[in-house]
Image 1 (cartoon, rainbow, N blue to C red):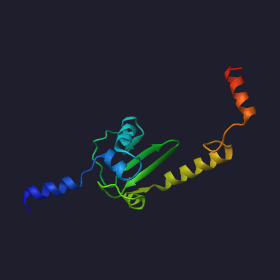
Image 2 (cartoon, rainbow, N blue to C red):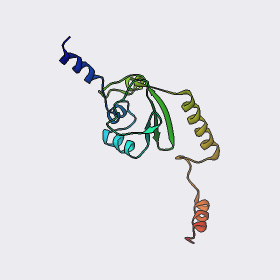
Image 3 (spheres, helix red, strand yellow):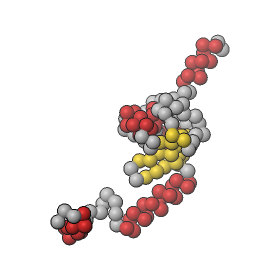
Image 4 (cartoon, rainbow, N blue to C red):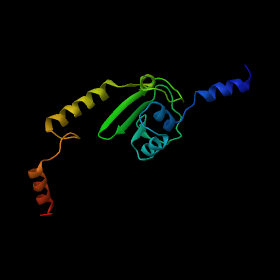
Length: 134
């Protein structure tokens, strides 16, 4: 092979972190992925990083989405966004991360808080009274 062909092959396997997050369907757009990285919601091997970071197989990513935090290991690279089943083949969530998310969900359910729980009229009035609005 020529030097040019080697460089071309090497270049194909390099993918930016923001693009990989978009391809793996963690975020709907690359712009959102970029904003999350810049906002410190994504850590690469335990460190804050930049959008232009080249993703490597075996890297650990901590990704915060809303109240949930996932720790995933990169197991494949791709630069084409496809369906969710194919996107899930790009990473593997760690056992600790799965356990922590399940525990957090159980605690939220037990406390009765979360997106499904809304205070009733009496509770809202109590909250407003405590805040000093009444």
